[in-house]
Length: 265
Image (cartoon, rainbow, N blue to C red; front, top):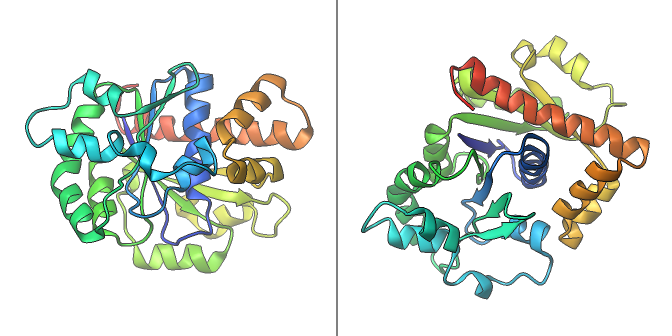
């Protein structure tokens, strides 16, 4: 199952942290074999949030998306090749496919437009869930990957201007779309209950990832998955229990949408 995390805007909805959180929860709670990947060119935010600030591109020269792009040109990707191209996390339950180290954006994106459908078709055989963190907006590669996705998680904020703009400009297939509100503040006047009254499309297919100071610090420190594992096991503090509860519900919403669409998990 291929799940695209995408946002109409950049840097406000917490898309990268949202996808790491939900992928980790799917692996930890639902015992799903999970892969994380992204199509960013010069932004390795996903790698830094998981592996730490000292994560340099030189670590990924012979693995990652570049490795799969090279090899898909000659044959379907074997399970061994895929596993040799990823970084294994959490007792091999979560895998991270690093992004590109190429120096030319146009060349990178042109290659991905050709190779990504075949790459996704191959790796989807080896994982229960493939989580894809996409460049926001109208990026051509992102649009192509959303077409390939089984589910699209649209990452929004509580800003009604952002939501209005999304529904005005974009028309994604509703049957495979869920909505995820990141950095969520339940005390806002624009809480989920009130937003669903205004935007009927959000009803019964929207989840939230609450704002949590520890989580934001863990993203900066490169310890996000470690924090989720610790909180899941210990469940200390009301804020953390609330956060974990909502993160679990986000996974349930995504998987539930796939089941409603006739998918098999």
